[in-house]
Image (cartoon, rainbow, N blue to C red; front, side, top):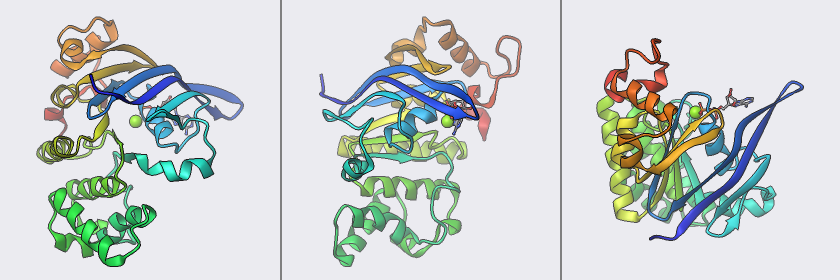
Length: 274
Ligand code: ADP
Ligand code: MG
């Protein structure tokens, strides 16, 4: 058994919508062991991105604990949090909106290096070049800006930027969903390769059960803000116990109907998205 890297305990996230409080995440708990991949699946709006944003503290949880390496990040003030922010990095779904169009790839990947205290420009250049090479781009890419890249290339730059922080945990929130199937496969292979080489731990959020099956050790299935099923990926996907998971799986196998309806986009397997 590996050690627990991340332990999320009784996480609750409320959004204030006008005068109403909307509970997007309702008492969610899970753990991820160092070097492993936990997949998180569930219908659109069930709270996956909210959990991802809470982990990187883009939002502050209403209550609960987010314990990374024994330290609870959930309620930390920005000052305490700042030196720990690099520990959890996120790769976002939208390869078009997530990179600053005014910066070239060298600056995008170099910024977290600067924050990490790599003072010398030459050292930052060398490390950015290493990371760009690691994600499978030519070093000539360093001089180019996001709009000169394809979606898949942008995701590679997003991954290089995330890795530049030397995170303990990488949160991939539908990180390949916007990409063509073949490009998606390449980026997934890259993530697997990086994990094999560096032992990086992943929280992999996806609606694509095929991808989840290939890539994750364990899976949690969410519905309406709560975890409805969990366990080793193979077991959960082969013999789902929860009716919701069964429906999700049935829809993934047969994307044309679910309960007699057309499924929403989240239920369509990768082969059909292209
Ligand atoms: P998922 O990523 O699983 O699709 P989200 O975490 O994005 O789900 O959303 C969970 C729920 O919270 C949804 O009902 C969504 O409408 C709501 N929600 C998300 N972001 C906000 C926000 N900033 N303000 C209010 N409600 C939000
Ligand atoms: Mg989402």
